[in-house]
Image (cartoon, rainbow, N blue to C red; front, side, top):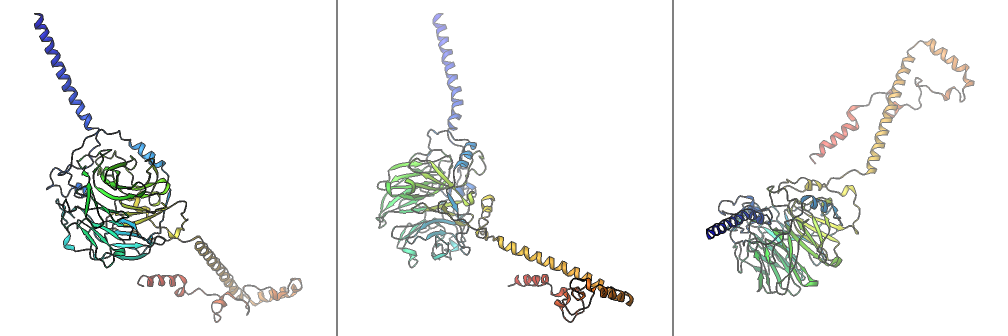
Length: 564
């Protein structure tokens, strides 16, 4: 009897424990999944059916559904939106936007990259009339617009840093979809074309327009010794160089000066879920490269992981990473300056949630991050507002000037450190704030023209002229009325005139200057007459001829100017 009760007791305890464990599993499992961020990308379950989805535009053919590795690791808690917005507002703006740069006659397409040549010119790479859309590539990353041929106009422009005027240009009839540009220490120009899946090295200023080194097979995406939408190049002083094979393969490759592969590293971290902190050596589009000579580091913009990863440029070993909640989940490019002990100038991008998760607060700015403290020092943007789609950034060695390439609106921005910035007149400003406020701008929309405001001196002169014209007209009207009264007096009886003449004769001695010194409006005289100013042959004051008025002349001038 005792053994039976004991067995029943043990059985009930086991059942209770099993129920408890099952209950815990049901509640703990959702909690574990919540340690990851909310999904930032639409699931790519069927590559053949979702080519037209927004996912394909975000990933740009990254292969999230096929070659991605599912990763799980503990995540730190995210800041709430209020904290991020407050902290962003606290950041100072240490750079001043140059509204009037570049010159108005510089016409640009989507600007994808920016660098400096040895002469100090700002060298940019732009797409002219090409736009990377949802159907530009198929699911196999094959370029679908080869039939259009190469871009016919110059894709590489060099701008004078002070005025923004074009110093030289090249790159006609060669590129299909420009992406990355780097000028090396020998003034050679390295460019990547994501449509051609190739990397090119050109001599200084483009030479004769033919590359001296080409890597990859034209229009053939792949892995191994092929590329799949390469994004950027960085070159060492000894001629060795690095390539970010970005959108599909998510890796970095190091080559010798002659173009022989030395090593490669990196794995694709696309898994359909965004993480706050990704593991080292994993990339979700290595989008840009920069060098830190003092530490012999190569740093990469890990775009969709919202961070910068730095590696030893000798052997590719991981060194450090830089991430900040204020930057957000997308980091498009960065550039290094040794100023202030070493800083990274960073541009982020618009959130990729597509409105699915509006709780992820995001502002698009440029940021300055200290490599020593890993803290943000300041932010910047056009007229202290936000960017829309910044794509690349370059900074001078002294840290005094920053240039940002933007896809939409299609332009290149210049910023100068506030310690060197000069005040600009109103007549030189541009109406660029509209592009930062109105977020829904069409891709091929032209850049707004400069809006010129009248100066204070011009307004003062115009006001004085109006006052003079008004007072002259009023005096003329008064004289006309008095003249009319005089004519009526002349038609009265002769006796009235005789009486008046006798009175004036008798009082002549009483007038201080004599009778002849006092004239009346109705007296006929050869002296001053307002009507005489208009026409000596006319008697009295007449109305102005409306056929020759200033107003009509001005109207005629404006009408003729419309067809000039």
